[in-house]
Image (cartoon, rainbow over all chains, first blue to last red):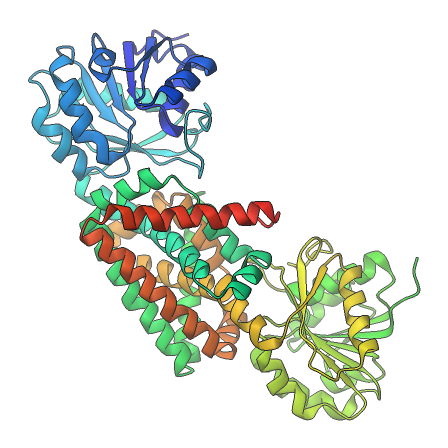
Length: 295
Length: 295
């Protein structure tokens, strides 16, 4: 077994992602000598104790970070500012502060100003997840073969960045680096907009007349069924993601809306070639994913 | 083995659905004594011969239907009128004419007027498919556990309807009956709109700046990846589906667009409760599917 990467690793929040990291630490033994888990609700704390996936379970965030050489924010991105205000004065000198949030400009905005001198902020985003949430939903293989995007700002201590990269390598991830603004645009189209569309279409179906709605549930063919799977994701997390990637998401929604209107117009006016061209582009992109082994 | 349901079964078109029916007939032996396959292109005809999934392979549609007591339209719905014009004068007296198309009002419009007196039109829609197409894509288990919706019009010979029901039962389907207009509305929201959205979002991504597009392909997280799978479907088939379910599809697109604007507006103005409510409805619908074992 390799030398543990950290002495004391603190997970602020222990839902799907946090509890998966904790499980990797348990299975491998080389992420940290001690794993500290913090959660807000007594129910989650009790469940984490039952699952026995952390060495220390700590209800007080300020106490949880004490002595930790690495602190990972695993709470919904909307809670970062509040949690940071609680923990910042208690961070160990030289500690690495990182996160797993789906929006990265917001991390700089919410954590950056409160970072103590000498501590290192290295935002990260493991692109892995399921539609389930909570400490029971995690599993140690979650990150295997998936990308983790690191978005360090210029001037960050290279050693701290390398430690975060190594953390994710040990979790089984492939590592990429992007600037935070590009990250936010890419995930807006790749992940946030698809979720917004999925949430919307099930709402639209839910508003149909009762008789039609019953039939919708009965005949949910593969198209709609896939959307409902996406749409079953955690409400708090996704609310926060949308609100914290507002500009990029609204830009992608605007582009998408223009394009869907163009396709709808082609359907109305019977423009067969335009419709076929759109569908062909779908196949081409899919082929690109298959070639990249991302399909 | 049960008595074959038909003496001579003619499949007009032998792509994913047609070739799956042919394979069920081969495996079970009790769909028909003789299976006739018709296709338009020499390449498809040659491939069907190689695959040996039909007893007779016939390039001429008019000859293909001769003597058949059941004829199934398995071509894209946009081709029904043209094919019907070729075959109608050659249908055997008393023959059952059915189909597998995703739109049902269009079947009445395109086949109804040309039906010879004494023949029986029983439209059907097996709600099964994959993103693959062509005679190689079919497999005999495709319809197992999936619904097939029958949309007979009032006055249709009950014996003919029952034979089509039994055909799909033998294919492994669960059978439901709907009126054609309700069918078209339900599939518009359950299947056609999700496909339209999927085709659109991959087009939108395809129009992004080259650098962003590369990143999109690289980081296709589960949300976007699921959309590309749907978007990889057969262009001709889906073009025809959209054009032949125009009114219902445009109505559902309009409803969806209103709802996506409302959600986008909530993101812009930070209306957290509205956003959460939309996401919660997604979970509720998903739960409904799970309870109905359609998830």
